[in-house]
Image (tube, rainbow, N blue to C red):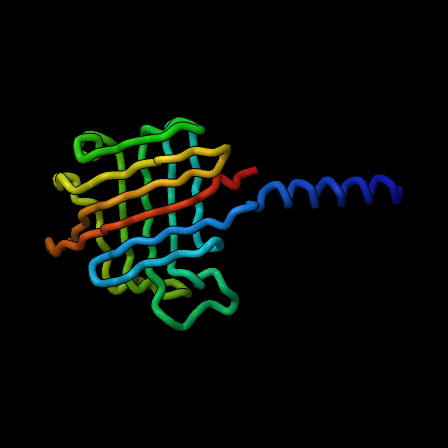
Length: 169
């Protein structure tokens, strides 16, 4: 009985270790006048078939207790993904694809509406997302977007860079 329990514990530890990365994840961008930076614990990359979701929150947002400062969130969901391959989505791809990009400024850590929410302006020629390097389950790339709110106000997302890992088991 002790051997079985020990084997199960080792297997659980091995699968947990495999889910953690040897390299930390990063995501940075200039969002309007905000220097947005996210850390390893706040970034998720989930590829499903030919689609992916890349989400990030303000660095430190995953801490416990939650931060009392403003938390911003950026999410990018698109099609065209191929596991282990580079990807280029230019403005033409965004016009015809099912891509969705959102930036929530000032979401409260315990719920509630954000101070402002911006969505992808699919008509903008500035929209671009690239996976420039794929190494196993680690992906690196760049992005730039034009987003708008419900009132027509616009915000630019520039100099976006990321390094994220598919950490699904």
